Length: 322
Ligand SMILES: NC(=O)c1ccc[n+]([C@@H]2O[C@H](COP(=O)([O-])OP(=O)(O)OC[C@H]3O[C@@H](n4cnc5c(N)ncnc54)[C@H](OP(=O)(O)O)[C@@H]3O)[C@@H](O)[C@H]2O)c1
Image (tube, rainbow, N blue to C red; front, side, top):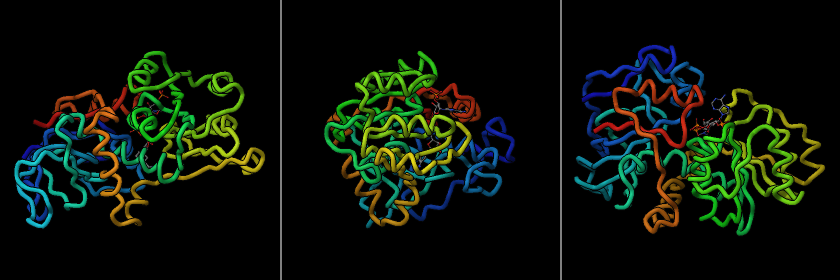
């Protein structure tokens, strides 16, 4: 089969299209049509992610495609349209084999390209807003990095989980258009976002900040929370891991909450299936729109991964495999 390989930790440009043996068939074997690209793919190409893959490795955390074969007891059969989670590596290949509990039936109205962009972000955002963030009906959610993969996912999902308003924080006007298309109620630029949020909310602040960026905006995020607000720590694309002066938590009765979706799924057996049981009907009914990804050809995997690293990516990025 053809697959993308990272042979050395020189960044996304090291990605090359190679011919290698197919994986063994001990699990659900999927003919991959599209593979998702996520920020950890970029970090891993430089050895900067917490998980260190052994070289050479195939990048890619998630796929969508058609089942070629599956164990009888798995509930899947040849021809089923599915999305699958590789979690960290292995997705950018023509064939992947996954354990049944990481394979999910794709609603008919979701294309393979969109399907390859759903699991990693939407399940993380579901974990963030529902499980860890305790989002309730009528609340306001501020989303940093709002034109990115996690950001657009948060904008698509938050209203379906009860949010009355979403405020998108972006670095450029063009990214603001992407955030609006993903459903943002309001869009503000990073520079001066705290004052803009104060004005938009009549001085009250927001109930939840979902933050995949971190860095120096963190303190202003805490200052933007309404009483009993929650700041959800999702990632650090800005590069720096911020520190919290805990007096700020006490002063305004706010929480800073870590969201480690992979770790939560590992320590809560059955969690992924439970999440999908909640999300799939919403996707099928159109209550949650499918992602509208930017699609790169298979052989341009390096450029696709680099677009996340160099901040030019908008929305979810996906590779078309076949
Ligand atoms: N906690 C979890 O369980 C979990 C699960 C999945 C992903 N994540 C993390 O979530 C984060 C976001 O992932 P993603 O796939 O959504 O990434 P993405 O599509 O690249 O979006 C990230 C956004 O971060 C912003 N950003 C600010 N400074 C940046 C910089 N120096 N370089 C690049 N982007 C910068 C950009 O928006 P602006 O230009 O508008 O600022 C960009 O749109 C990553 O850190 C990832 O590891 C965490």
